[in-house]
Image (cartoon, rainbow over all chains, first blue to last red; front, side, top):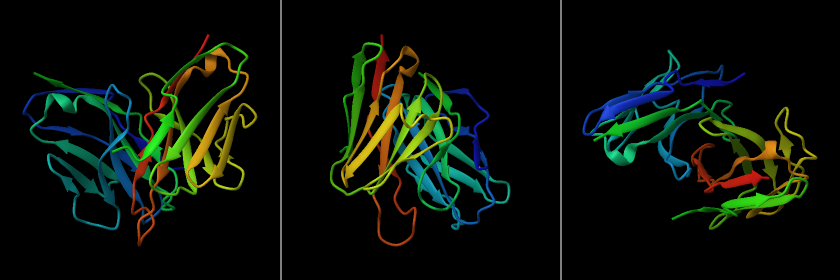
Length: 115
Length: 120
């Protein structure tokens, strides 16, 4: 079975600082896709960043970047220059079957950015 | 702007009644849509995969007669919670993938804004 694990239920960071959210997964597939979604209090799911497993280069999107370690099956999210609006639940998700169909979500990390 | 519209955003119903939730892809065709359920402070749990023109595929433990899914067109999937009970109270979210050219998984899932169902 494909699984996605987020071991940090809650984290906090001071405004303007950097924080890293952890995510590990388990799959026997070689090609798959990994995502980080953000869910603010509005409950809207917002895509933050995505990574194709066949790409060695880590994805970056403005203040958001990932550290993708395929051998270790690790996919952490780094948020630089944290802003108050970054406060949200963050979900690591993956299409581990490579079928580009459904996503498997981790349990989430509640991030609070402190002023 | 939003590419997946979900309606209603909130609904309160009495126990024993049925509630229909709509999920529309606004500017693309979605042969497949997904329905998730989310309890407070928990992750999204896939309930079923809605396939246009065919029967939905339900995840283990999800009652297909309880949660009726209809995907009659390429832009609309509906989830009907039949004979709702208080334990069905939850946040329901739909999603659809806008397929891009080239490789599978080229495009991420787009989510609706969700429906908060309260059964009294």
